[in-house]
Image (tube, rainbow, N blue to C red; front, side):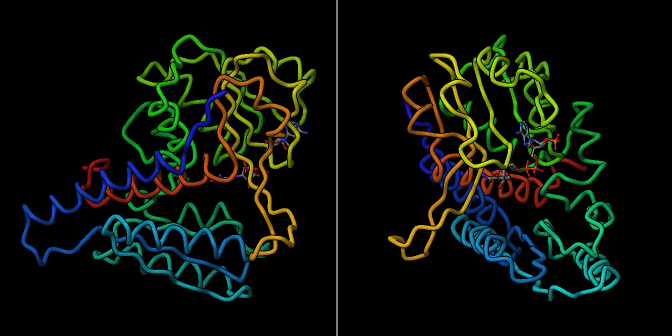
Length: 296
Ligand code: NDP
């Protein structure tokens, strides 16, 4: 069994991006602004606060600017839309994300649709999703982009492989299924997309050469879901109480690591697998926005 070291791969990619940003600054006037990511954070969800703080930290590490717009839990949809509109028109900001989840009184679809597709570095806007499906230049949703890079950097072949994805969310499972089934580099898989209504789930999962768990159910994938020699990508992220940790919790995935890992050729750990690569996906998209690579 080999661990897919997302943390280390993320460090390498950050160094590459930092070098590229330094060289962009060198060839331009030193006063030219740096790439800038803005995040809107609504409410006080501790996990969301941590994700946004990690994104700010990653921006600083690669030499990007970032700003966080904090809004209270009871902010109206109208006020949130006005803020997005303001950032959409701010020429100093390249990328904008609205950290999910949002409070129930706010329509996620309306909020995502209001982001300028050219700044939608999370790749959630219908225009970017549509372009991605058609194979046109688009911002790819950060987690699927990060997973594709993990597979590529770990030298895991994908062409002709059977990839089973469990979970069909708009931000992970569905875009991942499209990316991996495309006739492209690091893709060309035969993909099966499973969900809560799938029958014989464990049987289907056992046919996977690559199994991607994006279910949101802690340690649901046990040994009975995998065949020997499989590659397992665990997207799940669950905070489990642990009083031995300073934070009071530790992270677990959708895969029961202790039981599944001995059967795998490759597996991502939690933490240190997909999580750091999701941030890399975002940073890559923000650099693309700065360079105006997608929408010319
Ligand atoms: P969602 O809750 O949006 O989607 C979960 C999917 O899993 C749904 O398609 C659902 O099916 C399916 N599902 C739920 N229960 C079962 C079951 N018993 N059998 C088969 N399928 C099932 O989750 P997300 O995609 O947003 O996130 C998934 C996990 O990944 C979460 O733990 C989340 O925290 C984590 N995550 C981690 C990230 C990272 O950076 N590491 C980034 C994003 C997410 P149906 O559609 O039928 O309801």
